[in-house]
Image 1 (cartoon, helix red, strand yellow):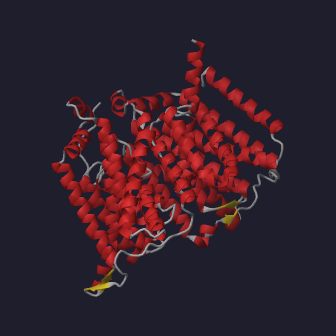
Image 2 (cartoon, one colour):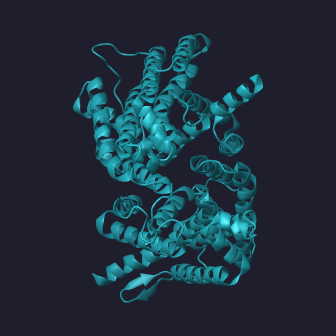
Image 3 (cartoon, chains in turn orange, red):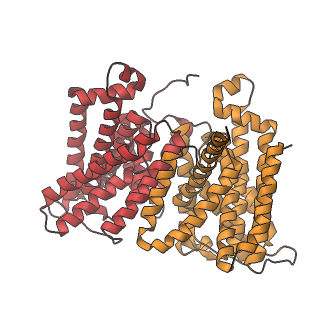
Length: 312
Length: 291
């Protein structure tokens, strides 16, 4: 069972999700909120891997993309029901992550970064190249979502779907962290050898977290594909993987709510930066560098530390 | 049949030499600071783009090359001074994100200062292919290979004969011990960023006449250079060269014999297979983790 602090946090998040629509003036803002929610679902899972187990992945956009394309292809080309395609995509990614994870999670540090990066790029190149199935670089259209006759018809309906998905993800992850699995993960993060000496099966827990985070990315990918109605390989590529890791680090490692905040800030920020036109990349890069240089632990833990110091 | 293989080999060695230079850049910075610099590809881009625009503005080629290398070196030093050093002892992932931020920043700056178009650089000396045993090789490929050999020899001399070079080796070996015997670790770190940026720029200038250059070419070439450094064994100079050449040749052979559509994937398939069996690369250090 999750600790009381987690329950309070979860309740606050639920309140924000419930109240936010009152502040969203039009469809554009709903759209941004939905995209932020989808990114947050991926980041909450990825944070489990990076922040808690201390294992980096520079290839999670690959899992996100596989989920998205599984939904697009199975519903569009083979007439599967949307929920069936979503589950099949998630299951496929889970099996794939377990198969790849076993050898690559033995790697450490930069070698693991390289391996996950390579895996993500291979997935993205396969999706771009197999254009008869995936539509290639131009992408493919995705049929609307249906669940036993019900279909989210507008942004508002999608908002509640994504909001519920986010709350479920956060609840799942908080429970996982508060369970003995979470303790084992923190031990592995501290020192893998020491954890193993204490009897923690490090390889098993790392693999478990890798698979969980991959499946969460795949489900988010399926939702994103149906919501957007169109999917291109850009969402599968290296830069999207980097974006996801950046959100986790920016918000604050080993903080589930930090991951949510990071995802929201870094989804909303570029929307405003498009106003800067040609200066967009420049300013985004500078902000990213500046934040991590001055708050190496990320936004939420650094601000929390400031607040604590203020009180004392 | 044989001449075709030779042709692919020429292509592979040329590209491989470039990967080796980029990989050496990764290795230099990693050894002095344990940072993986994801902005390494941006040095390659700056080298090529600065040369193209200076030559376009009427500056003579040799002067343009020197200025481009100098510019990239300054950018490398600024990166160390204003981003890596202030971050202090941040975690590995945080440092990676900082260098990624730097690479986005530099790309943004490049498309503002220069433009977003593809640019061709004229070859150093003509573009008439030279016939060798049934295959052909571009004069520019000879420039790439010759310059790479010279740069590697110069690096060897630098590490064996100069005080700064020896200080860099000492820091690579053991940072704390180096500091204890009075080596200015910060100065060494700054020098490694400068040297690595200069090497990257040289690679970018050498390859630009063959592959074209643009503000966003840095990402892929940086990743391949990282793959080469890992393939050889992170932190090993000879490993970076072996890794770069092996990757270049594998890529050219794979593109020629298997599938050119999957050319960019080959490097990453190779690196995954190697890591499955040799988790520390071909020439990487063997040994356990100290607790």
